[in-house]
Image (cartoon, rainbow, N blue to C red; front, side):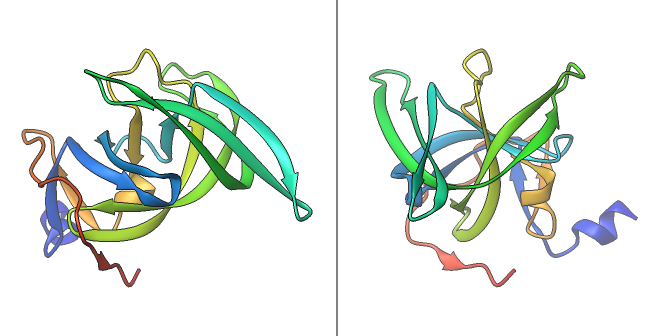
Length: 155
């Protein structure tokens, strides 16, 4: 049955490089996690503010390992949702929607903003973002080249 579901899908590794161009992030290492429902992005600071009557979020994060640089991002808040982490702890988190560039494709993903500083990867791409787009082979990693020009994903 699993072969029927993944037939025709591009297979990626458990970790890949992606881009979040709307946030000004050209390259980011991410863990592709079919066990996690939602996607998550590490933020160091987070503040909410209003713009044109809507709630927006301003947040900072550091990208790069050898020479980390701080990136300041702004995105309109999508909503707040309760998320259960792998330890069973439930927390309320802000979500944004952002375009992801991965494996020559781009598509919008709902992403929660949280502190992932103790995690190996600043981004986790969950099964909602992967479903219908990619299969994940846990024996592989970094199967794709760095994000470049991409093709629109019709889904």
